[in-house]
Image (cartoon, rainbow, N blue to C red):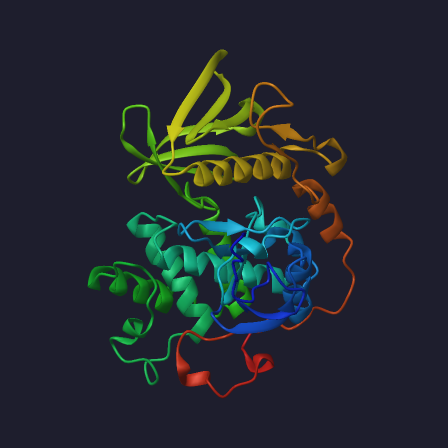
Length: 358
């Protein structure tokens, strides 16, 4: 006699709707109802409609899986079945624009600015001292406006948690730049200057994937608009441009990057903690290479994780590529939407988004 196994109601076993919470870049939250066949595109569209955002291709929805891996939901796939209840997703930048000046709308730039603030605070965007001070001053200028000795006491920077390690020396330099270099800049200009400076840093756009190299040393892999990067500590030890990457593949927990460097074949080998982490790393690489390298989406091909096409995992990036996104942005013609600014400090807690000085 078979023993019946009863499962608690979940999105995997029922067609009923369940509530999904989506955390935005300013840590506010919105909710929507989802079913087991809800696709990533629905969730992304829900957030973009909330913002009235047109340049949506740079963004994605992600969640943290049971192994603490951050996973972006493919737009055409149903991945809510692998998320844990309660269903909490995050709206984040997925593809960092290589040229922020080519972003058409201030709203899109503002959302990228919020993402970069998070990257700085969580230590993903590594900054030398001088760059950190300038970026910090831009954030303060965008949030507070011009320095005013009557409103800002000597330690006013301490209200801003900008960096994981924020020294007194750094705070003093931020104050100096805020007082003297950025006066007169509206919030939008300060944010744009921050984007311009941040995008020149080596770790701009890097979502680090921890792994071990062939010697057993810890390394962090990432994908940027330029190509595939490897960091050890704070030092970048490899940059392989997308045109020089011929194949990305994985087998079990081993990830391979095959390319050409100085006219010689190069094979880089890395080991992840689990096969699932390795597969996720491979998919991230495939998506980034397609987005930044291809001239148009019709050029995107289905790729295999193995040397033999019909073996291993197969995957195809679905979406527009960077050149198409920039072209579409140039054709946007509408009244700019509000940027929904939220201050880091609470002196404007009762102000409406439209009251934000821009």
